[in-house]
Length: 82
Image (cartoon, rainbow, N blue to C red; front, side, top):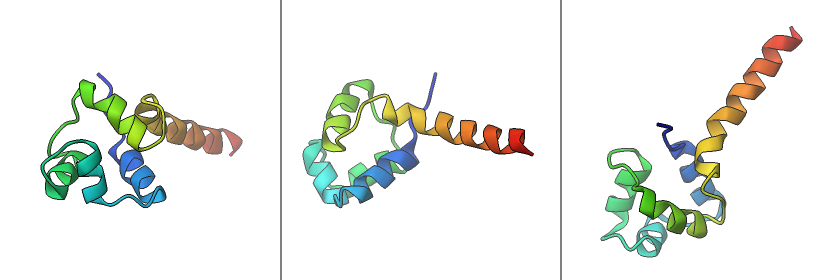
């Protein structure tokens, strides 16, 4: 099972200048603290939350999984050039 790239989620939120409270409201969560626990990995996002999260972050669901692959490919290319 692949895990979500929480760094991508946090960075994307910051790129869009959305606060933790903005995200909590958009995701219908109790408060900013609750959303923060998801973003930090204390709680796990559920599959049914991903479409809404992608909508709020203006990205594709697959973006939540692809970021780690891209980083790995970049590292491999750097080593291959040496």
